[in-house]
Amino acid sequence: MIEKQKSTTKTKLLNMIKKKEVVVGIIGLGYVGLPLAIHFGQKGFKVIGFDLDTRKINMLLHGESYIKHIQMELINEMIKQKKLDVTIDFNRLDEADCILICVPTPLTDKMEPNLNYLLDTTKMISENLRVGQIVILESTTYPGTTDEMLLPRLEYNNMKVGQDFFLAFSPEREDPGNKKYNTANIPKIVGGITPACLEVASALYNSITQVVPVSSTKAAELTKLLENTFRSVNIALVNELKVLGHKMGIDIFEVINAAATKPFGYTPFYPGPGLGGHCIPIDPFYLSWKAREYDFSTRFIQLAGEINVSMPYYVIEKTVEALNKNEKSLKGSRILVLGVAYKKDVDDDRESPGYIIMKMLLEKGAIVSYNDPWIPKLKPSRKYNFHMESTPISPEVIQKMDAVIIVTDHSTYDFAEIVKHSDLIIDTRNATKGINEANEKIVFA
Ligand SMILES: NC(=O)c1ccc[n+]([C@@H]2O[C@H](COP(=O)([O-])OP(=O)(O)OC[C@H]3O[C@@H](n4cnc5c(N)ncnc54)[C@H](O)[C@@H]3O)[C@@H](O)[C@H]2O)c1
Image (cartoon, rainbow, N blue to C red; front, side):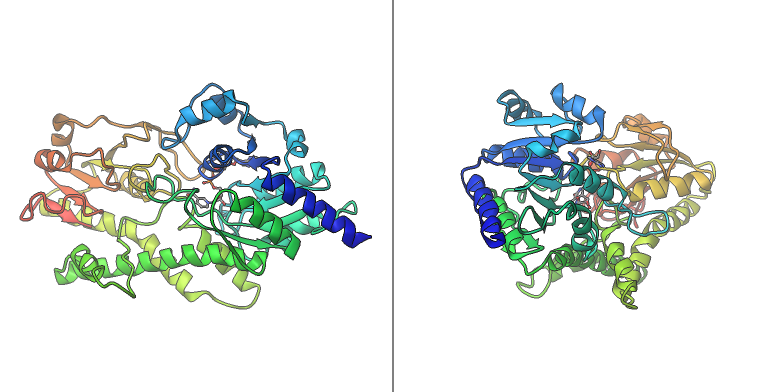
């Protein structure tokens, strides 16, 4: 009897997915959830996007974008055609057959996983859960989250996983701003709590991209953390070699580019002013936290973290040294920070090393301004208390500066012009390479 019900619920959902009759509910319409909602809509699914943030929902409903690289025309058209609906009303969760969770998974001040957003969302889902739904977690998290934290909260009221409802983990691998890879052509890793959960989740994602099934939700969770830990460790390696390169008089970018000509066994990573964004500075610590439960110390993560965290300090050290050579002290110097987005051509400033650099400059008495074409204003946050607006750059503004620090090499910057009018450039991105090789006013940091 149970077997029959199990296969009927599953078969019904699979059929609905095949015919694109399922409603896809996406919780959290940020950098991950919004593109995902568009993508499911483009593939012919009806989508409901849920978010707590009324400002974001209102903006979407008024045809305004809050993420630079997302085309509003697509969203407007989908809303007009009733393919996409966005709401703050979580009672409507029962309208969705497939619920995808894309809420933030940050760290606490003590560098421990902060699952508050996820647990709040799970509570709202459990209050609305009905037979025949699949819940898929996409937020990055430590191995065990889906079956230890989500499953017990959802599997109550006689609702049985793999039978009445389905539960899976499928990490989001979106790289905002990447022109080559997006939700449509990045394969989806999928792990289910039961084989039926895996089957349903795979069927859903198969309708939008290529699926890579794995044996469990834990394996899927660890896959995502392996990918991001790999990046963090390799970035730390080149950051360390950059510092050595400066001491030895060797240009690390030249070395990396030369090494990258090897057709196998090497992947280039580039140094910078420190890690930024919602993923690489955070995700590895989800794993090291969980590893402690097994009396296991993840030494690579720790070391990479230490090196990457030290990079903004290195930038300050190089700035002080360079100003000294110009017979100036950092205190009282006018410093312009170029770029506070965590990487080029995006409007995402989460965990930006630019802010750590600005904070240290201010603490040391510098007169700091910044420019970022994508981040016009800095609002006070949990970590920083900046009240600043982006300074428009012009030859006159740059000429007034004692130093310009290039933190983010946005494509809109004309670095030749910036070099021409500056007294001193601290370049953390190799952005001025080739402009004037013998230029003594450029310091690579
Ligand atoms: N940004 C990336 O490049 C990226 C890439 C891969 C994976 N991820 C992971 O995806 C997840 C989401 O990241 P993001 O960058 O999209 O975050 P984000 O902050 O841009 O978006 C999250 C959204 O969730 C909303 N939200 C928070 N709590 C909610 C709740 N209880 N109910 C409904 N909505 C809620 C917020 O208002 C926000 O709009 C994180 O786990 C992140 O690690 C991010």
